[in-house]
Image (cartoon, rainbow, N blue to C red):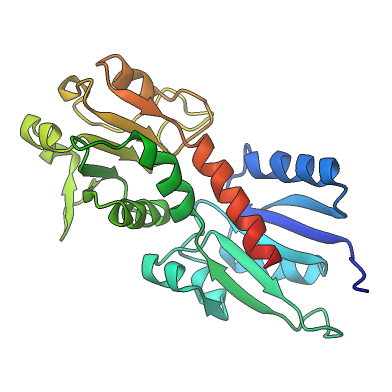
Length: 255
């Protein structure tokens, strides 16, 4: 019979002002009688990562958030195919051999953002919503792009600096806005406590045919969503994506 030992899971990022994951997983552990806890590891620098492992020998899995989804990759021993393709990791599985020393483990990187995003946006798509603008080019934007790809939605990245496959906010003409009926905010603009910020897009070009999806979930309704809804656009925040992503994290850690 396998004896279950106390396990620790956690989130690394900076800053961690509000963590859905911590309350979600600790509530789950309490409700299901699981001998585990979920801890926030606020790291000012990714170089502090190995200290987390040294100081937490029971650590069994990590979630990764802004700004470390790409910076954590060099620390991985292996990458899941999806994480490799996207170039971003938000779930780390820690594999320890039975009887191995605390410092003898393998780190495997995964990306559960793709599944979370894909499954939360797919019910909102229709034949009009076949082209998307992705605001931002960080780690989360790559998972969004991959999710849209799997759903057959074409996309363009929007950033402050133009490069191949990326246009600037200044390039968002009425024609571009008309042609792209899905707008996804992957930037931190508008996240608590900076609730009076939003991406600089021409909101006046939005229509009821547009879907404006914000990966942020705190606050529930961001300024991006408010300004989009004022033009009649359909809006959605990132809470369901986060929940679906958490389900997938738990599956990965336990498979």
